Image 1 (spheres, each protein chain N blue to C red):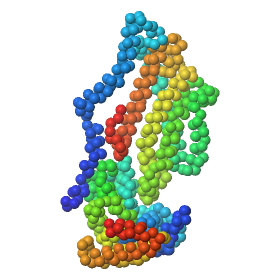
Image 2: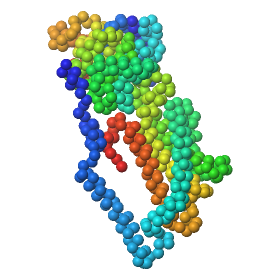
Image 3: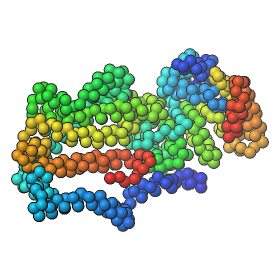
Image 4: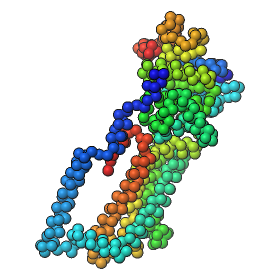
Amino acid sequence: MSRESTLDRPLPNSQLERQNDALAPPSINQWKRTGETWLVGLLLPATLALGWEISVAQGWSDDRLLPTVSTILVALWELFQSGELLTHVANTLQRVLLGFVFGTLAGTVLGSLSGYWPLVRRLLDPTLQALRSIPSIAWVPMFILWFGIFETSKVVLIAVGVFFPIYLSLSDALRNVDRKLVEVGQSFRFRHHELILRILLPATLPTYLVSLRTGLGLGWMFVVAAEFMGAEYGLGYLLIDGQQTGRPAVILGAIVAFALLGKLTDWFLAILARRWLRWQDGFQSGVEHA
Amino acid sequence: MLEIRKIQKRYPNDFLALADFSLSVKQGEILVIVGGSGCGKSTLLRLIAGLDQPTAGSISLDGTPVLGPRPEIGVVFQEPRLMPWLTIAKNVAFGIRHLPAEEQRQRVAQVLKRVGLSSLAERWPKELSGGQAQRVALARALVGQPEVLLMDEPYSALDALTRHDLQEHLLSLWVDQQPTLILVTHDIEEALFLADQVVVLQSQPGRVKSSFPIHLERPRQREDTLFLQWRSRLLKELDHANRVSETSSGPVTRQHQTTAVG
């Protein structure tokens, strides 16, 4: 009896303790330390911004080409109040998300196929690798000819950018899934789709989620290029518009908006990843990261 | 009845792992196969499991040939091989995924209770000890109620105490379901503790050197005089098997002997 009970108890595993530490609210000391790190990091930009603000206010220098932070915020606020900012953000966000979804779908399907079937890989991979070496922006003129200058060509360009990192890491990760786990599936007579859905894809999930974040980052990069090629709305359009109408505050405002949106969407994926990867037993997998 | 008839396994790199290998195992028997490393023990189990095909000869279970993995044959590997992304209960349910959800739930609960791990059903594999993980692997193999259970050095990575516990535990489970049990090991004591029949293998190429029915009464005591006599007899046999097949490399033989003593 006593044997059963000792065997039965879960391990007082150091891993678990580490994880619980990470989930517990940080102590006051930790907060203080995080706060200090933040303050130190902010010191340089804040001093520069403040210095610039004062120097412009005193009339020592001209803010025609480099607006002060307050001017940027005012510009953003005006854009927001007129409703323009929201339209631009909505347009850009829609393009990125559509491109991301299509790119992810294509990357996932083709990546799975070429990672699973050697024949498909031999057939597909050389061509895709060749295409990958072309800078995607180089396709812009072709895409405009094929899909017109409106939404389709933009979404396609973004999707192409998102596609490659996902295809590449998924097909590679699949080929490197632990053979021993696959064998368990074989001993239970899994069919192809069961093997893929129940063993291979979950096993590659950590890599896959990282590739989604890489893909999304590229999506944000490509949306700027896409909106440069002629758009009526969108943050990329706002950049061009700011340049053509000589309003640097608007350009910088758009850049700030890009930064915030990029961080926000990446953060969203990071949270999903943490939820889905609770099972991971890695060096530091339980440890909080920014 | 599991029948292995004159099988041969030659790997693509021309390595002959098994040659002219025949064996028959009665329903409900515990057969333990011992041999030094590289004598084709694992190869043999993989062939019986249908994970690999022999290059010649045939394997049949109750008259039908084994051409691939079959539901009547369960496997426990040397490592637990649990899916790290599934909870313990879901890992066990892997073996009966075709059943309706409610029945799956019941049978998983039942088998987890039998291996004494009910309280860990919702845990992740990373939270288990080595012995617990290996018991989950056993539960996963047993949940489909196989006729034949194959085990490939299942306890070799565990400490002696846990190993003894799990051997007793395995016997108590076997009494319930009485599957044919084929276990491969390099641990003579483990073999004697469990087996109705011990088969000693000789390597390069792997083949049966000798076979002993063990008529010791259960539960067996490891300190029993008869047990110890059998132990030294089997050790000699195993040592001899290693010597014969590895005349070229003396030190390796010594090494085998020490692992066999465990």
